[in-house]
Length: 112
Image (cartoon, rainbow, N blue to C red; front, side, top):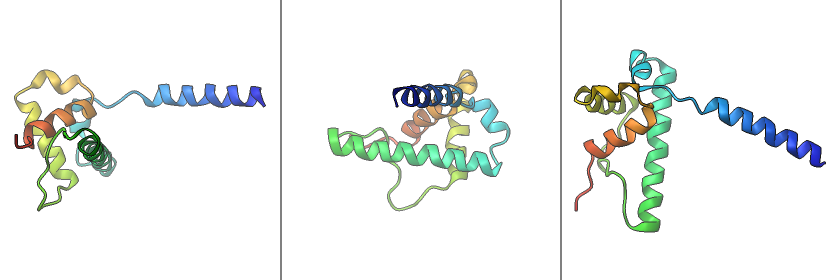
């Protein structure tokens, strides 16, 4: 049983390590209209939105405040990302997830 556990952990670590490589902003934007990339950015933004909600609930703060009366779609998240890196071209080599959260903070700051 212990052997099986260690094999499972080793397999998981191998999968997690290989899955860690994330698209750069440049790579993502080359094919931003691809349905898989649109699904990818939607998943990232949904996860970040849930994190922001949990952070607000537990700590009384939030990372960004998206509009409450409209629901953004994947193409709009691509636009937010694209607009953000226009003035920050060095970030094109950075992981899309990290840059997206900065772009969302910039596009949707919370009232103070």
